[in-house]
Image (cartoon, rainbow, N blue to C red):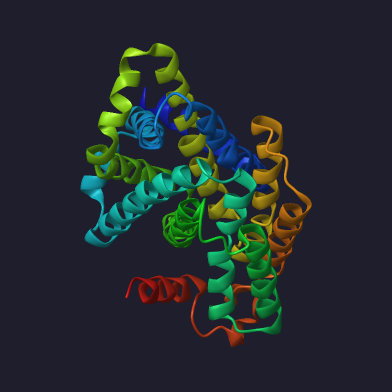
Length: 317
């Protein structure tokens, strides 16, 4: 029995590693915005906080059955426990902010604003002409998208920029988990999702309660959770574990375009010419950005992850 279980485990690991890491990234890119697009359709029947709770709760339930995260948590060091709890809090805040943003703004706009933070971090960590140009392009693109509107949908932009800040922390903490291998990263992700559920429940359970007696809405919410928080986050771990940070950074440039495309197909959110120009500037900026990991070994003084941590700490002070 033990040998059979071991052989199955080895076989599953072989299957996972036989799939190219770029394929995992493509899967993540599609579902990263496909799930939220379905969530927007659900907003007509359930409040934003209710949909956010359904997303996190359904993902946490899947991970609980799959990984039994409470057992894994007991085996972690104090440092690792702190990391997964931090990631859980970030996931809770990021999901809520993202949903409030897309309830008022187009998916393509929110998806583009999301990447301004990582580009700024890259420019801060490695002050090269290339990164400065990337930051100017991305900032210009976001300026065109928002047109510095202080009224009307200003609350939507506030949540979009808050989601941008939290996305930086998600990338930093996600890479930290992936350093221990994709499987270990997914194990820790399962714990983080339970932490996110605990964090968001006091503020949103009442909003989601009515769906518990409406099977269609409940199933739709579960579908949103699987598409939004299970498939893309698991794919992220498998991609981060096998792709270098520079390669992963270049691939991230696909995400604003993916958000725009899914917004067009699923939500019929046709962008205007100035919105297309803004999204295009952000895509070019993301593709141009360069982290310290791109530099020659002799020129690396501080790791990219460490620089990002410092920026995150500065932004909280």
